[in-house]
Image (cartoon, rainbow, N blue to C red):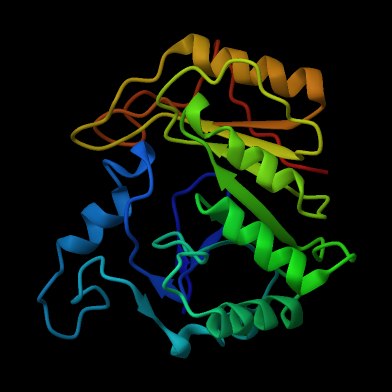
Length: 239
């Protein structure tokens, strides 16, 4: 069944796929890899294969079993659009989300061009269903192109996760984006996030009318630095 979570911007996680491979500097200290590799070789554990990619057909039915609507982070321990996830399996995940439509599904990827291609092919000229939120991770200015891929998806609930934020994003066009999450890195090798980087993104969101969620400053543990930005919690969600 789905996992409860301490991630502030969602209610639960659903992982029909686990495991991944690095694709950019945001992956260097991946929390999911660090967690999964602790269990490599432990027979019978869900992560006995460590962070190697694995599909879980048995988990596809979970959303149908949930009693009440919830906000669900899809594949918190993987990337649904990893090139080695068979497209027929991605189809099955989407079929579940489309049918179990009392929930909101948040799909976050660094493989933005693959998500764009898949969603444009699946929905054609029609919008992505409003309860399925496509999102991209952007860790620094060099990866802002993922936002352009996102913008070409026909959706009213596009979102960007600037986490872990590893550098100044600078000027960024957030037109067509509904929601932005900003957060610093956590873990034993956490890289520092500067206040200016977060403030600039908050102000860009204000200017563009984008809901702004400040998740954490980060540090050794996710809660080490707290969640206050200029003395205030920012917990906005799209309307």
